Amino acid sequence: MDISVIQFLIVCPLVFLAGFVDAVAGGGGLISLPAYLITGFPVHFAIGTNKLSSAMGTALTTVRYTKSGFIPWRQAIFCVAFALAGSACGASLALLIDDYIFKIIMLVILPLTGAYVMRGKALNAEFEPYSKLKTTLLGCAIAFFIGAYDGFYGPGTGTFLILLLTALAHMPVTEANGVSKAINLATNIAALVVFIINGKVIFAVGLVAGLFSIAGNWLGSSFFKKGGGKAVKPIMITVLVIFFVKVLYEVIGA
Image 1 (cartoon, one colour):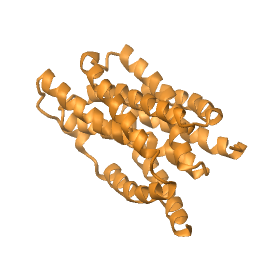
Image 2: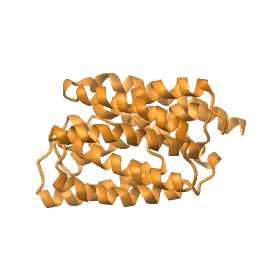
Image 3: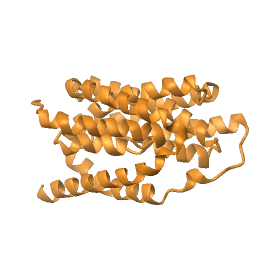
Image 4: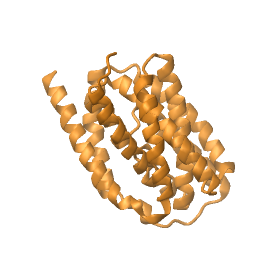
């Protein structure tokens, strides 16, 4: 596949921005995957290559959050195991779906995702904590199903994980953010393996973009405690609108 300089110039800055957003509030895939698709990469190659660059950045944030004590690994390790299984199943399913059908699915998912980003306020709520066992079991179920979504499509995974781990598993927000990073790293790796096996990863782009993802995640994780999430919402909405218009144009044209 021929890769142009223009594609690098579009993908890399947006992947950097996605890394920053993902480390602060999750949902960086709402920016990074559209970045690959806007430049014209086929859907399956875009998803596979995005998994490579995302995994590189998420690995850095996971390490930093671990060092800062944000990830309770006694609970998180079980969630990671279920996330690996779910992501592999989702990625395998994605490879069976034609590009055109995938775009139709996106036309449904994108407005729903946009509505969620605009109106989601659950992270501001406080919940009565459950027992460690109940929290872990609920976390595993969430990890499997969101892992399957991440392997299948992906954008918004980090944000969805934080929302569900707080609202359903009753984890504190800081802990939920840490666990979500461990789960997200696992889902990225599991899906990446599936896409590599099926030859759907463009390494030249993914590795370079991955360096930008690492830089973005480094800055984002540094600002995690400073309330930097407020600027994330308008960025996500802008990219979603551009992406939706592009996909709609392609579907109508087909």
